[in-house]
Amino acid sequence: MTLEKEIESEAVVLSADGPGDTYELITSVLAPGSNPVEVPDCNLPAFGRHIDEIFDNDLNTNVFRFFIHVTPDNDRCINFDRQRNEIKTYDQSPDNLLGIENETVQYKWKFKLEDGFQSSPNFTHIHQLKSVGGDFESMPMYTLTTRKGSPDRLELRYAETDSQITLTQTDLAPLIGTWLEVTET
Image (tube, rainbow, N blue to C red; front, side):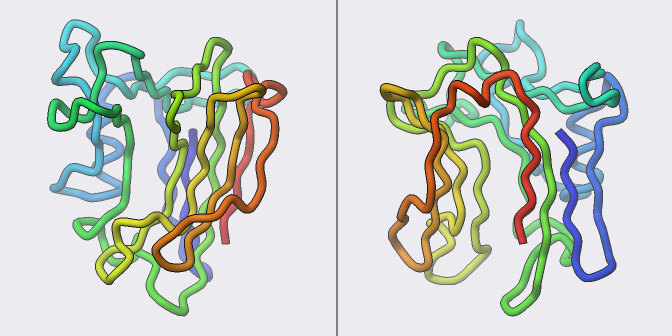
């Protein structure tokens, strides 16, 4: 995965640079001195870090790889009814990484769900855009999520205020094992 945030002509890029120090690399770009990495490492220390970097032959570059285990992973040993493995920008991130009202921001990223990927019976959020501060900060404005079903689906959801609607959905199966490129503006 490579993440880019572009504001007019200013671009901030987070790119995998090879194995080792993955959390430190992510932190140095997304929130220096803070903790933009939320992982279930505390619950399964024998496994090690739940985000690493590997070389991907299809893309011919290093990528971030995220791990989540059906059991026993959870939400940072805080919440046990869900799992969390994410990187984020938030109120501790540099101002140039936070979109503000009336500003045009573009995010570009790629992701691949490997063979064997399992959607949760509830939901599996792949990506969210959230407000920082304000009345609706707990409700994601945009969510890319998978849903278990017949067939499993990939959904793009949107919330203008305090409730989400599904903008579009598609069968997940043909997307498994394929790099998908996302551009959000």
